[in-house]
Image 1 (cartoon, rainbow, N blue to C red):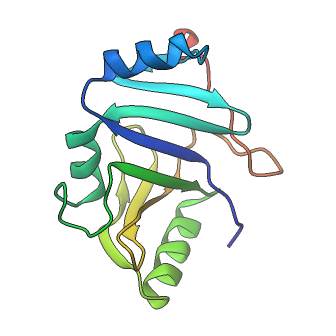
Image 2: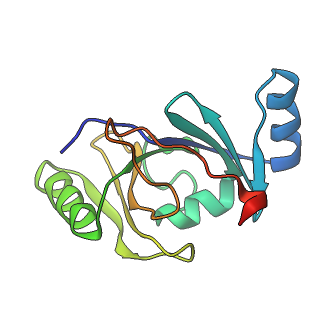
Image 3: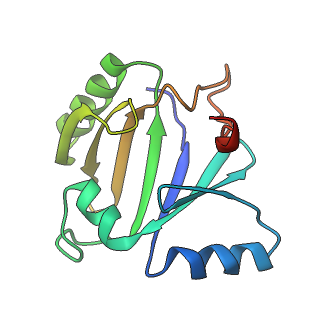
Length: 144
């Protein structure tokens, strides 16, 4: 498995308020479907409603010890690789909170929590292709 964090998703109480805060810091992002994507070097910072994030992870808020409303994502190059990484995590002691499945955005993803309850999404997202070095670039949603 390649060592990589592709996205950091922050579960926020109010997406508009959070976006305005990051804009005041000079971090510009794009919003689509009540989700803000901010390019941060070779990764992305994502702002999404905390309840929606917990539901997507397959946990209820505060169910998993350590679930803080932050999810780390590891994007991979294929659906098979998603299954392989989740299986390796489970063998290492992770708890699969949502088995890998097709996503609403046309990808394939699943979630697990590590031994301390930190949530990870393992995803193949054809809309966010990986560069040779594993970095991602957020597409221009206005051109979609």
